[in-house]
Image (cartoon, rainbow over all chains, first blue to last red; front, side, top):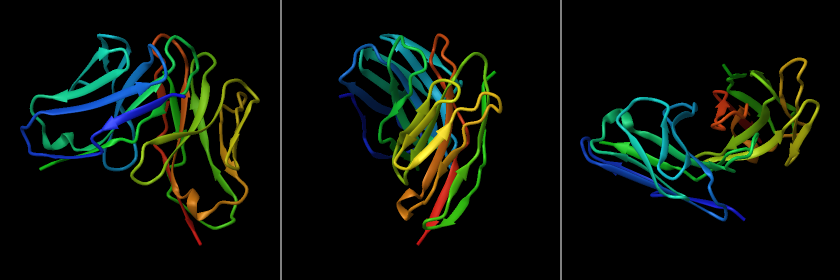
Length: 114
Length: 113
């Protein structure tokens, strides 16, 4: 069966520091991968998605970047964190190349910027 | 473009009450429809899905029917429990080349004993 791992679970960082959040998927090949942010309240904002290695699409211009160095690895980064980067970050995957598939989410990373 | 509208709540019910969370959508083509649940401090879990008109998705006592004529996918449960307290998201996938999901804003459900 497929599993998705996200780490760390919680992170406290000072303003201006760098960020690296990692997500890996097991049990499937060539998945679509996604990064979301859930700010205060409940809404989900899609940040990046990827349909293959090295292929990144950005949904919202911002202080963050994403990379996919391996088929099942998706990394969210920042060179200098802002206070507004605080939030709950979720990684997700879906079956690649197949229509109408659901996305499956990791447990999330709670990021607090001080 | 695609959009999902769901009742924002919050919804507060007593244990064993009947639950309905309304969801309507706008989409091109023939979307698949999903309900996700998010328990406090956790990620989203797929609760149920329906891929074509008149399909009924069901799981853990929850169910929702894909109604193309009313573009709706309302979530229902006959008897809620305290453990059902969570945020519920309606979502759709209209296929295409990137397989993105369009989410509603979420509905917070609180069930009191």
